[in-house]
Image 1 (cartoon, rainbow, N blue to C red):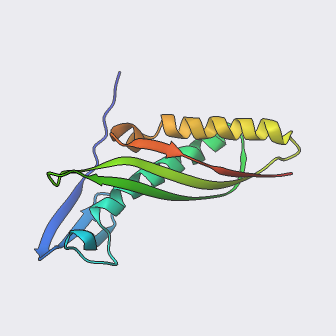
Image 2: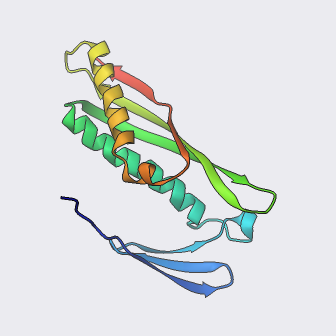
Amino acid sequence: MSKTAVYDTTVTWQGGHWGHIVMGNGPAMDFSAPPDAQGHAGVLTPEDAFVASVNTCIMMMFIWATERFKLNLLSYECRAEGTKLIELDRTEIFTDVRLWPHIRVGANGDDPAVVESRLQRALRAARKYSLVANSVKSEIVIEPTIEIET
């Protein structure tokens, strides 16, 4: 039987191109459109939040997968970049989100090739089970850098 979960946010217009968001899990912050859309620099934008949601969800699912595949994760850092296409009629869409995770794992005496194979499986699982990545139309591309410490 399927289950559901509900997540909520509340946004309030603060005047001009400013808003304030309160997230159901607690954090609250100001946000704006990006500077190239008459917004402000130095604060959260919807575009930042979109790319961040893909990046953070993939990371959390990767952490889950490394535990499942018994990998000795030493570090994970990932830069993500979303490409926005602006059509002639001014409609916009993110065509893709690219992630460049830098991952370090310990081999713990295992064959590094076996460890890398498990790590690649963990990356595929992270992509497969990412709620956010599965919920967007954008292409999701993951190009990892992997270090295996023996």
